Length: 395
Image 1: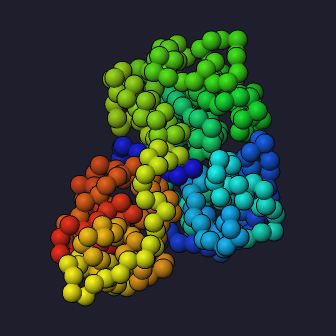
Image 2: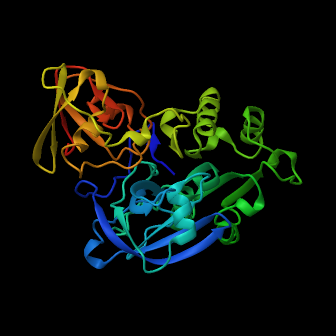
Image 3: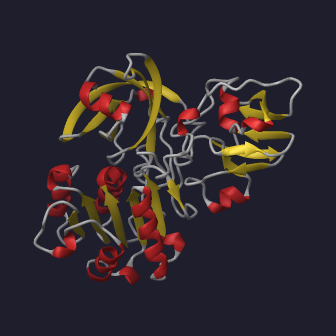
């Protein structure tokens, strides 16, 4: 997963207060096989880091590891994964599905074991309910008075944040109903199949589960085949009462998420009711692999000056105007601890505020509209367009 984007303000729920997200080394306490190509990884969180790893259902962590590439050379990789369990003190659980050609996900599925250590960034992300929920450090603050009808549409590993949200709201409030449409290729690909069945058994009248399999024939034709525009419309017209839904959660690949958002908009669903998260942007031509790429500054050339603030310290770097270098890439050349994870405009980890100067942001799948209006940008997608630019990662 590369994560987190949404189109509404956080109403009623506040992300746990913490300093800027940073990496901590945590031990793997358990690795559990979910399907033939996916695992659940549990990390042990020591008591002294409990505040740093407070989180809300639906948030994610970035993982950093140095592993051998296809040529046997060690490379540092960063990947973001949603936390797949409701908040529990002392642990963080994520699910990692092997992607075709995915270096980190393949390595993790084939090699990761209890006792290994990986670097985890403290949790972040805005794919969370607008209803008042709770972090693991604040168990009494969840809003048990307000009920609601929740609907989630997930595909593949998009179930990971959704199951955490579903578990939490169903357990907290007997007036909550949760309707889940979950798409996969085949039954053998369904992640958390036992946990979903358990939710159905525990809340038979409040949790509705609809498995859609694209490569297996089910009894109902509606639940067989790929979700396209026609099938989505049928699903929304038959298994979901659109007008009664208080909050929507969508998590999956770019094309499906966009299809669902557009369809809901056509049906009159207000944007503030819809929260979504992406696996990736679906655009293979984006320069996600260029983080830290070498750039040489010509002292006599046409250069932009980028000043930045991080952890209270000032930094400065120049970048050639013709290099079209992102602010993140430039900053990483002079300071290795500048925060980032996906580098694809999806997760929001590299967020900063433009204090001075002019910039252009190529893609944004993570920032709220009001954040953009206030001057926040994703530095992995943002380039300077004025002679000097100043950004604040601490803002």
